[in-house]
Image 1 (tube, rainbow, N blue to C red):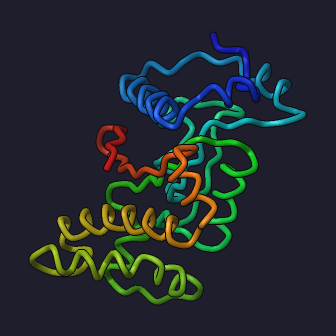
Image 2 (image 1 turned 180 degrees about the horizontal axis):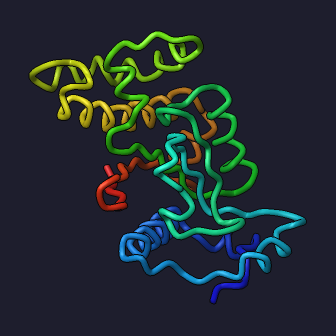
Length: 209
């Protein structure tokens, strides 16, 4: 049973690649219903005075994608930023910069998922309250997919939706690098790694892009 929280020394010993491997091994345990046993209250007590997460995951808000469980992580292990459609904005960028430049995380993982409702809404041009402005962040991926996939360019076309989910992750990564000089420089210096993944609602498996 795991009962020791990650501390600064442990965090500093990690590399971006080792953190990515750790998350993917955790996902493999999740898929095989073999999650690590954890003494959660022990970790709670040990992290009262500080935190040293190894990674930050930018995920959709979808309730079917419980990020910590998906990667078999616990208290103090990872930061999770969530917004419908897993895109970046000023607040998300600031959160990612804090995670890596201030708190020492080694990895940024942008995680999209199968049949994303926000992506489907963007594909259909949904307009409703503040949702309209939110979906504008996903429109670039919709436009890119419309040039790559045949057939209807709306949510009735499963291939189009799947491609848009993928493009949304990839374009989000591009924009993170473009809009954050801090994160881009850290990646160039091999201090962090920025990667993308897709979560399968069918299997629970995360596939890296």
